[in-house]
Length: 29
Image (cartoon, rainbow, N blue to C red; front, side, top):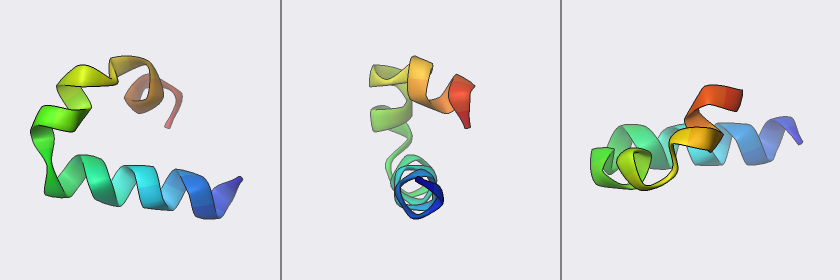
């Protein structure tokens, strides 16, 4: 799960638009 969280976190940092599309995942992290 940690690896998945890291991947999602990196993706969010690289593509802020994705963070806006998935606010729930960002909130969980």
